[in-house]
Image 1 (cartoon, rainbow, N blue to C red):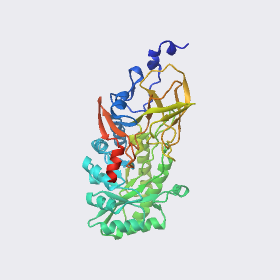
Image 2: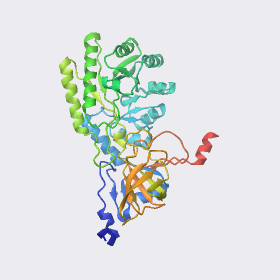
Image 3: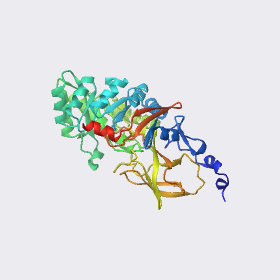
Image 4: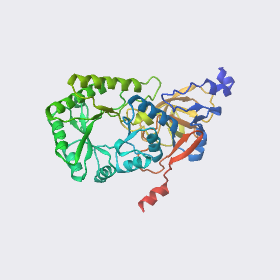
Length: 422
């Protein structure tokens, strides 16, 4: 018989320390097997808000935002709000000096209300509506354009000089499935630049890149940067066009399990600056400003989702909802760390298949006595908690900090859905 079996109260002390690369910075084990985040007990959050409930650690979001800002400098980091933008989260980012790559008119309005200035706002996405374009023009945000048709659409609506970023694809993109944008150094790329220059209503603000997801090595970014700077040099020498800024996008790797690689932000920033400077000097042009627009890398670790077990049998555990990041095709699908919380178990750990909504099942080590009604916490779910899709029973999103919690997004109910349809 093990010590943990003889003295179950010591089980909490024997539990491995929560990996700060996977769990929120403030996550700690507490008495009776509970978990605290932002100084708030997870069991209390589950009781107050029901399950599933998505929890965001404000301190973690702001700490990670500060790391990026310190590494890249002021006005060089913008949050890629692909999953939407909650007002309070936008305020956290604004206080840390970050900009925002918004995907809709609604997200732009949220960012402006939070205090993010127009010089740090960008409308991105390959399916912009007329209202999206009009909102971006009205609030002074830059607009990413990926085709001649988009250039013409923006120019037709802008009455004053409108900043645009041209979406460019490096040579490596030819081997990928990316289709939005123009290949660097090709005739369509030069034609896009010329179309912007010819329009009296448009101003070329820079080049915009998107290289992929879950990238932990610098190589792809370095190759793209060299190619982009070379393109800038050709524009400068042949057409007297100066490109002031290059955005290398996001796609920065996030750890979901112990041993996973993640992007070393400070080293990454230093390396990119060096590559940009050396390449620009080689071609005899001024070094373009660099910007990055991480999304998941800023928020994923800050979020956890609390679930109740609805069924546990034959090494399969079924939860009462979907994990935000457990989406078909996502790089993190089926890889989230999961912990039993709210009670101390002396049972041996066993491999379970955890079923969470329609996503791919997650393989997890849980105590063998996990049972219906147990509470579990799933790490790394902060990135897509803000998705705009409406569905019955959409979980509440709760912010925690300093021992306090507050509702960021309230839970949707059947009555809410019926009222929307009336």
